[in-house]
Image 1 (spheres, rainbow, N blue to C red):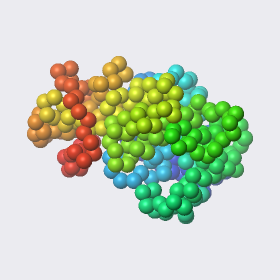
Image 2: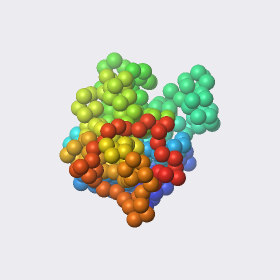
Image 3: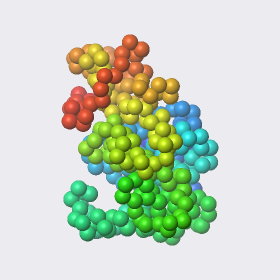
Image 4: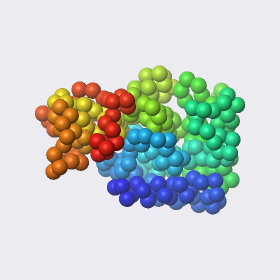
Length: 295
């Protein structure tokens, strides 16, 4: 699974770079996401589904994480294989406009000036232009252009301004909610806190069915979240459970009462045991140090 993820990431970095070859990239991007589509339709967890635990992700890592989350949400909404491939390819290109603005946005977003924030708000239009210039005009490229243009038009501060009679694509909304969660979970919030923010302060901007599908895809404790169990042990969430969002698949980080794991059980993973339950999701400040964290 990790080899699949790393190979997909290499291809994403290539096809989302400013120097990618014109024409045909959407076809190749659909091939990249096909294993992710198959996993989602088969009820399996996507490899590398959780946002990174620390550090600012690369553009390719962010694009792939958003695509994986969007495909999982789309599968929960009942989209077919072809539409999920369109969704995944469009999600990989949703931020492609940022590449053309990179020279003006070298600093991390937290350090941007007001002028740089205004520059960043141009990236949906820049993305639409780049996809149009580098792709043959067809149904797939039109879908990707709409996603690039519309993925920030949901939520409390939408941009860019669209005509009053403009109807946004449902695929854009799926990418938008996936993008919101991945972005927040890749910052200083835990995946659980990020989910709460998307459902709470940002939730009014999304259709209730899309919000519900996000919870079904991620579970109550999203992948990458560190949790404390009732016996005092710590674990890392690997994937959501299809039948019970409160009982995810986990990887053990410590034994009971936070005692070190025995050598033979180090890194062991599987379903949450029936006799155990999660008592709380740990905020990032309480996550185990990297040396303790097998995830």
